[in-house]
Image 1 (cartoon, rainbow, N blue to C red):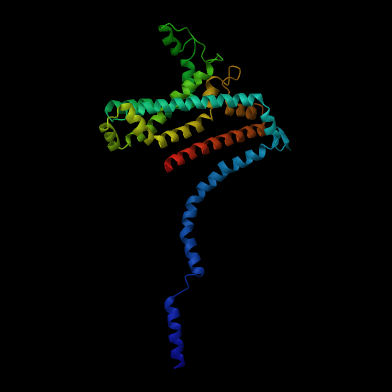
Image 2: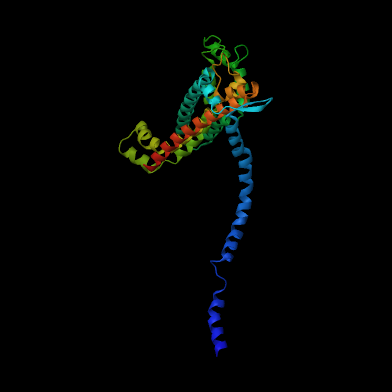
Length: 316
């Protein structure tokens, strides 16, 4: 009887099987998550090696007198940043970059918005025009710079040839201190307005037609419908294009390097161009790293402000 009682006591324990709260559950969870870790690990490894580590290394270099050919790497602390604060050439490059970014972003968004409104209907000729306007976006910046450098050449360029037919005298666009930066801005707008057009076109086509019809029935004209119906609906798309356009414009390098090489008299030298000169011409990698970190912080600050604006508007 005692033996049967012991078996009856052990039966419920055996029927419950192993304790799921024990080590078995932990091994099961790890076995389920291991494949995910294996799939994600290469991406994390590449990001750590080629993105995270260079960022950390550049930050460490910015605190040293890190010069190619000199292995001493003298510790300076914030010495490079102090020198940068008193560097008039850096402030000139910052001014050039900000002016370029402001005008290019405003220009590309305004033109992109106008074209998106114009080409919102899908027909064979609007599809053809969309492709034509978007083509500069996919072209290489270096190729774009080379092409426009020839187009703006005062001797053989087509731009001066066309302007001469309407009585405008030849201009040395890329060598004039007053015209070089506006010429770069015009090329930057031409290069980027196609991207804004595509993003805003998607937003325009997503505007609710019932709201437009209701505004029409209330007697609103085309301008009133655009201002009070279309434009508020496009606010997230507009801010997205502004954020992306600003980040790209603040990293201006290819156009100014190919078209003007920072001239004339540093009137088109951007921050990245100045970084290149200090790091790979003067071989002052520590100073160049300090410039890179300042630019990085500027881009982060601008992006955070713009994204907070986007989040605030979305919450409304």
